[in-house]
Image 1 (cartoon, rainbow, N blue to C red):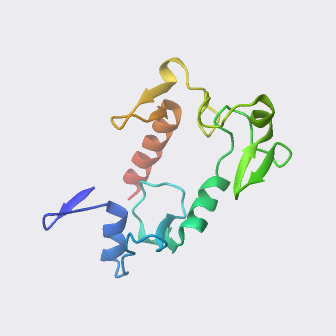
Image 2: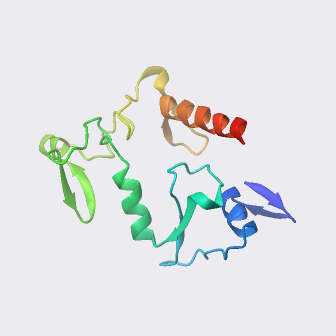
Length: 143
């Protein structure tokens, strides 16, 4: 977030606007900004694209490599239900993907030092958080 003229902006929206593009409104069914680089902290307007919510959600789901319980999501191990991929192993074991989450979407275990709780109360994988921070710092040095 950044404040400009007493208004708070999300950085990627501000950069999109400063690049001369129209901002999408937050209306239901409206367009959303999708980060083509898969890094939600990126603010490069060239890495953003306006898409509908369905397209944005499908792209995000396609990037998941593991279910919430740590099983790898392969073509043989998944089924599609209401447009979303589900792990067949979790279904066979009677596990709801979000209730019994033992691993982050990238497959790292939520145990011991690797799990942290954000100020909003969300559980986060430290390994993934450190990776995102490292990549962000590397990009900042290259700029």
